[in-house]
Length: 230
Image (cartoon, rainbow, N blue to C red; front, side, top):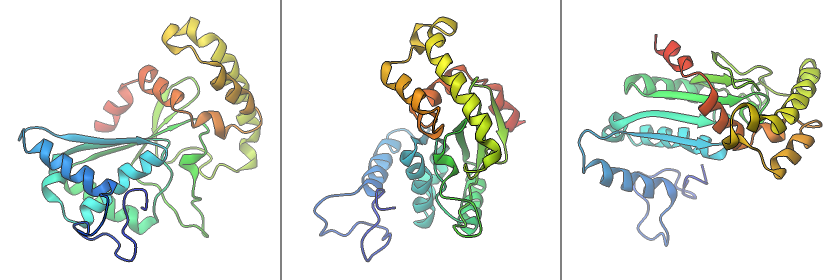
């Protein structure tokens, strides 16, 4: 919320206080969106982001709904996040699901394999965080499918330890052969390969890198979205 522009001691006023020295993200983006959309009555927009950016994307919707920005919400085509952490509890999710339904907004959460970030903060009786929206899960072969929740939803289950190690070994091998099997565009650099090696100890680190999310969108089946629509 602070990264998006939460106002100290004020929360989310509809307009940013005039005495602020610098405009913050939410208000600047909202203003620019209105200016652009007013130039074309048929134009729509989407919101997207990776990791913290994914959290900001769905929170941007939340604040627009809180401010009842109906005109903008009606122009919002969809939200697509990549490796997005959980951002609220069940009540927060129910509120936004109703807003998504009301304005017919698509919301897809893309999760790659054993990326830890989408599995945090924990969905348990202590932290109470919950995901919502359509989860599009990609395995390490970039095969995608719609799931209610990503496997091993809180990441630290011991029964997934062996599969994570086996998968990390495969990802390290894949990093050396993908340019031959998929084309030169997919060649991985030395830094990412180093992260793959570290991934033998902690699968969470390389799995969160943007590269696998880019590959998933390029190589994954588009039919996964069509099946959701049908």
